[in-house]
Amino acid sequence: MSIASLGYIGVNSSKLDDWDGFATQLLGMQKVDQGGDMRLFRMDDRKQRLIVTGEGEENLAFMGWETNSAADLDALASRLENAGVAVTWHGPNLADARHVARLISFHDPDGNRLEAFCGPEIASDGFLSGRPISGFKTGSLGMGHVVLHVANVQGILHFYRDILGFNVTDYGQTPYPLYFFHVNGRHHSFAMVGSGRKGIHHFMVELLSLDDVGQGYDIAQGRDEGVAYSLGRHSNDHMLSFYTKTPSQFFVEYGWGAQVIDPQTWEPFETHEGPSTWGHERLHLPEDDPVRTKMREMRHATAQNGFRAADPKPNCAWLDSIVHNE
Image (tube, rainbow, N blue to C red; front, side, top):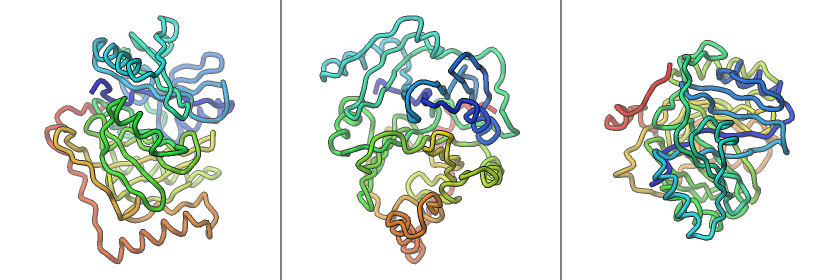
């Protein structure tokens, strides 16, 4: 596979000052740049992981996917072009702005912009979190994951699975289609929700300590619409997390304890328990909303069946390759 991890994401927003406080004071990222209508935030030794730009509507601007080498980037570009996908090679101006050596961009069938790159720049100074946290779980696992709304799952599945080479980890069909994809040991770096809509549902960052998540939960409860999904645990990746609403009105999942898989031996399968083992009450929806009601019913059925997620014990072979940037 040419793509190794999720390197960065970009968000369009006119609420740059709100993003400053959200990214640093709640998420614990480090603000490193304030140039004009752009904000950059660090999570580790990389010069940037989150980019917020004042252009366009409040939504995802782009996903930045990392390749391990220039040869891998060339191979990815060739594969895309052979599949009829238009690829743009960018010069040093945009590459320098992204703090990478080489950069291409292209679009998925729903019009989402993807960037792929090699040669990320490493900061000369250490990561300084915006609030006291233990750090983010990144390294070879990448920034985290992104989940998109898609208009038609089957129409876009071919692109991510067969052209980009993302591997299906697992999938569910109830109460709507959900597909999860891995590109390394992280259970999923990308997922799609067949909601019939387009745009970003959420991005996820994983913390090194459960207390980081719990204290973030306390902070979020003091913010207007700060808790969108209550604290809960997912049934597939075993992440213990809550969801908070961003200034751009989509969500961030803030979590700890997800399983690390072995991508060499993993076999995809269909799940039936629903997204969450417990919790994750969708507080942003009305009490009688059909989706909120259905998710609650599925969790109650899971409780009656005694379903349990495994304890967070990563696969040792992959654990050795993870870099913890504390």
